Length: 344
Image (tube, rainbow, N blue to C red; front, top):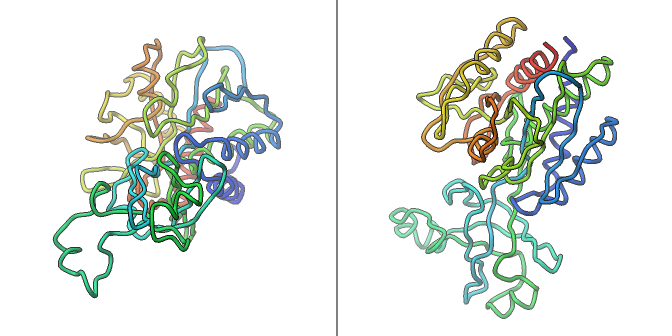
């Protein structure tokens, strides 16, 4: 098996992270992705709604491998009288998981402003009781404060900021002792793993053992990422994070094989194929169940009515939908299982 190129994977991960891509604003990250695929010499198709599909291999029952590139984030709901921004979530971003985060506000006129997610009131020294007694809530006591001299809604509108503008959170990537900490490990780290596997096959002069579509979707976080598939797909494999927690078997050093999530059990036979492949190739793995708030692009394709087998794998990841953490071992194990399954 071709060795995992850790440096390449992390470099591509950073390139993808550097392109803000709150769901709906996919153009920048799609441009980066297409540049990477061009560097790899891959043929690909850009989808009308956003998303990219590259194809390799031939014969057999066609497989679709999916990883998504959209991020959870915020949207301007209204402009408050004091010049702060009332916001709502895009995807599953909870207020307690983004307080104090630096952001970029993308206006529909093409301007970009920086700011911070804050509580209102926001000072422990003068409003301690209010902060302690009331949980953060987007509707009532959470706002974005712009790094601009604004004191009123009119000041903000003069900047070109309006309801419906999109807000992206700073990823803050750091790697320490093998631990990778960043927002949006879900799912840009796994997209980087998939690209690393494509590069490894190219370098080895090999290809998947059957026709394979590599589908980089842009709407997974809101539930319609892979609601359309190429018509000949028979199997669907999502590569996504495996949230860790008290009831989980997932581990940041391992690849998880998903048995069930909040929507469905995964296909018994395909999941068993992945489990046996992990045993055969020596990938460090766990089988896990993810409830009550988890799903993947593979679920979306099944729900859309496609006659497919569906499965999912991914690295154990802590703090899902927050400032996430995994380990390079988890990415390595995911790569190892993915590469082995593609070429078995």
